[in-house]
Image (tube, rainbow, N blue to C red; front, side, top):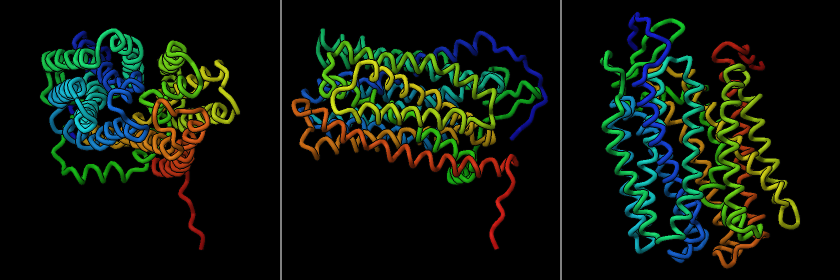
Length: 443
């Protein structure tokens, strides 16, 4: 790590804001791509004559590639910076959506989702790196929260305009249009994004408190970097925090929310879209609140913010599926708001990763962390689809409330598992940084 005694201004210039804005706009499009199948899941099932397990496979493959690419993307970002990696990511997503638009079969559609997951994997970590290299360190937590909040606009775009376009035109035109936007943003990212300010010769992070610039580039061995990141309990705490908080909302919005609300709960498409819209808007509203609370209580975030978010989600989820009949509309809105806490709470995981890792493995640790939530989401999505199929309720014609009630039990063990490891790694992290005393071994 290189230290340069420079005292930069604590106020980012217009170029930093322009680069961040383009990065966030690209992230919005990435979220639109990621959730595009969730808003049209029933139409996708009809187009490909897919049962629940096959429909879940689309999302599982996409998330598996996304999660699997996080560490390689992190290493590539540490080596090459945001601009080239983000440009390639946007191009891969455009290719994926074009393939989806033209796909005549399930096999080709799965290839499309693989391309989509690979491209999507590059965008969010790249934008987080831009925050680290263009903005002072003390602004990091707030900028990360704003990045996550604004990115969720992509879910609204997928939910309303995308679904409306599909109903007004055709499958090919709808997904071809998203592919066209992907090409446009590929060009925009390549033209506007820069890895670091022009006056510096490397990616850097700026600590406004000390005026020190730290170089954020590395040629370390990949395996060494990953092992070193995972060896710190703070990284493991970040992983399990991200594993546990957002996956239920991801599974709900990405695939199973619309079928559950329409086919199982008996709502029309407009009411179902309204509930998912509340999920997105609530997440955007809660982001600054949770971000500010996280800043105010850095040593108590897991107990005061992360685990309460998990508990609220779990209680609302169980309340909805425990009722003998369809849930009242107000309770479904409560579920949407409860699930919305997961996104902002998951951003705390990146604060853990940034705090407990040196800058030369910043993106590697971020990649390890980001993989957690998507591993949990793909497990939940697949198990819900499998549970529906095993009950003989795997197609839109056979979806039922009772079948979904059983299938929606699948996320509960994931919440319990994640909560256990959050508590374990939180204790280890506090011991590691000197906040708690070492445990004495019994004789």
